Length: 175
Image 1 (cartoon, rainbow, N blue to C red):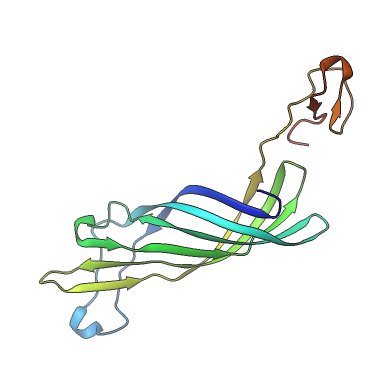
Image 2 (image 1 turned 120 degrees about the vertical axis):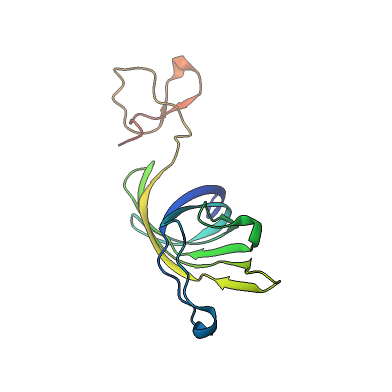
């Protein structure tokens, strides 16, 4: 976080079950498909951009945008695939429990696609729009060190003249 803006990068892994796939168009000529594997792990590498829209008490409202690359796992033949980028638009709401911990809910819309060659140069374009609801805990790494004096009961950020002009935090990171 830089003032009201967010930039970052990330990696994520997802477990997906692979059901019987039936096409929406031309189902009589294409037929259904069942993968030999029943599940696969998808991985994502992405960059994130966003910003804070509003704050009401301990609730923070953001908008963010992720763009990156998908890895489709062992259930997909990568030699036949041409992957596209994925785009993810989210609207996180965070509840500030302390300076370092926040609970969040992040509803998102995602758009991703790939093309798979079915033989005889017949490409099949697969579009995968999705809605996600992510929930979790966000942890900010403290930027000031904990006060080295064990008997110090100060709870706010403070300085000790005999230790120089360095600022220390009084609380452990989990409070």
